[in-house]
Length: 385
Ligand code: ATP
Image (cartoon, rainbow, N blue to C red; front, top):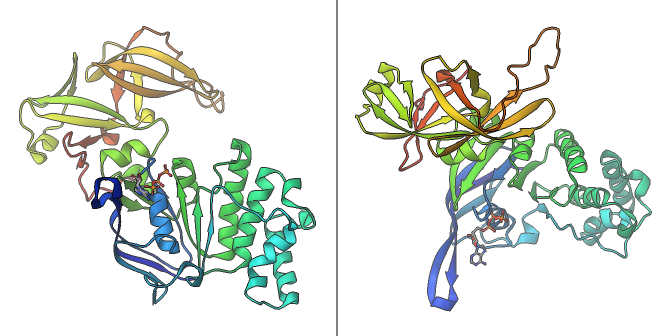
């Protein structure tokens, strides 16, 4: 086990066809340190640089600049096979002619590990992944989930310093994916190997990570625990990427202590207007998560007037999509009380085309700069209980 430290890592790609050098940014100026034994998740939209970063750490790709340390060892010039990292990809390639046991032990065999030791290690790893009854089977006699566990087991059996996992669950069906995710987390608690896990699935990021690194267009947007990232997104990109349905972003124009959103008018607390030095006519983006919007009687002041566009019943709740001044927003409506004796369903489900008044919980609201996307409020110091 080891820490992993990156200092200003960049990987740029040249455009040979145009005769240009290092034109495309894969990743740029990436610095962080993962303490020994932690589970970090790299997350972000397609093309943000997740796989490039993982491949640079593995040594499969050479950084254009910057330094990488695994433990105290500077590994920039050390080839992949000597970095003592184990990588598992989305397309796990098992050796088809070998049994599960042989697949698990192959890495150790290549390193000349003693036969008895290999057998013992294979047994232990197979047991922890619950594939000990499959040791004599060949890969084609296994389900996708079982094959994926063998691929993980092969990496674990090597006892590497660091685990690098690139979307290892994305080929599994949703049920199996959920189970394997839980097992992966438990396994990490048992073996405690420093792990870097790439995904574009925010649920995987939230449930697996000690810390999440959100990337966009090659740059780090935020590093934090899952609750820091969800509750205190540093900018609009993070706010809308983490969460499903995503945070609603509602453009508003400020005028004399009021946010104007089409015909709707919402009071802006005067201390906030003073703190942000808001000017009349200034545009801002209000950010609010679907769970912090509530339907209220139409006569209430300080509400958003929205028109219902679609309804998606999801069992316990219904996802309502509505339109306000050209912006589409989502609301989560609790339709089935968890315990009907103590909790009331929050309102009857409205029909499409209805106009509703919606209250924004001011305590849960974010304000973003529309030109840079950075968070203006709450300010950097805020901690939500
Ligand atoms: P995905 O989730 O779609 O796999 P990703 O976040 O893993 O995406 P990367 O594969 O790391 O993204 O790619 C990051 C950026 O680097 C992309 O813009 C990609 O087009 C670019 N890139 C990656 N490899 C090369 C290459 N060999 N030549 C030029 N550009 C590249």
